[in-house]
Image 1: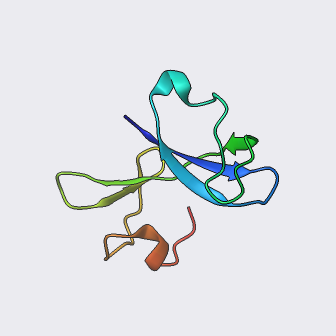
Image 2: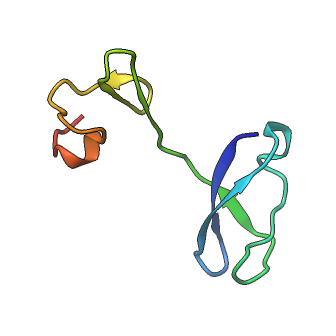
Length: 77
């Protein structure tokens, strides 16, 4: 099951939840305040190719990265 990121519309708490894809937009209670007004947000991800280069977002490779995180190299995408 995928992990989705949510923001509570009442207390602005950001949290994650593992849910089936069919339930991604179903009402979800905030773990902080209990309100059922959480809104699903966009999630960022990173992956590594077989060559060891970091792939960010939709697979755009940052050739200037020397670490495993494109965020640490300061390169603008």
